Image (cartoon, rainbow, N blue to C red; front, side, top):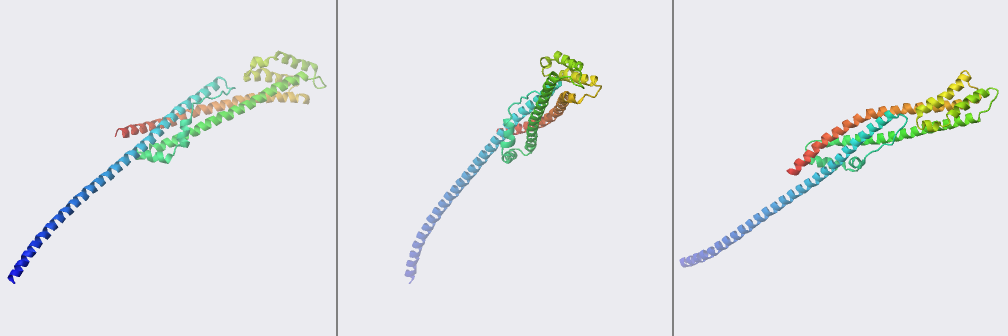
Length: 305
């Protein structure tokens, strides 16, 4: 029996040695597999981190490009604003020299301003800017661009309306001159209108037959040297109460003189509005320029990071 256990012991010992070896080999294989898994996991995490860094870099580049483009539009808007101020000051100056003439206006392209105001997705550019810079200067830029664009629309519309109104008044003046001229030419003596009075009007008319060449578009002279003298002749000859037959002539004279005065009054109002408008636009432009400088500095700083 002893031999049996001994033999059994040998058997167990021999079998145990085999199991131990097998366990060691298995443990080594498992350890190797674990190390391989560990390094694979590290590689995976590294790849994920690299991809995330690449995504952040690409996203930052997209943000930066959007802010650069918006900054380009802002610069173009500032140039337009400066040209707008020059146009307004020029128009006011030309009206001061000739209050009876509203000239055409010249404006540089406002495409950049319109794109910045109407075509740009502001929310995207707002978040792009905040992603790069931790201030909200861009909000003030948006506000001032809106103001500048509205001022542009107001100025263009104001000029267009005043230009049309001015031309309508001048058409009335021209018709008044022609009507008065034809009336005097066709005037015949009657119980209330003496030939001497008609002769006086005809003599004046003859002396002023080239008034269109003399005065041209000089409406001040047209009022002083044409309408006013006719009115004075009528008034003095009939002691302030022209007969009914002359009421039509008197109406043409008064209408022409009044419209000339209206041209002067309304155009001077326009001149004063322009004088007050120019400095307000300059304030807006200076504010846009200041904030756009901050934006440009931020772009340079982020680009160099």
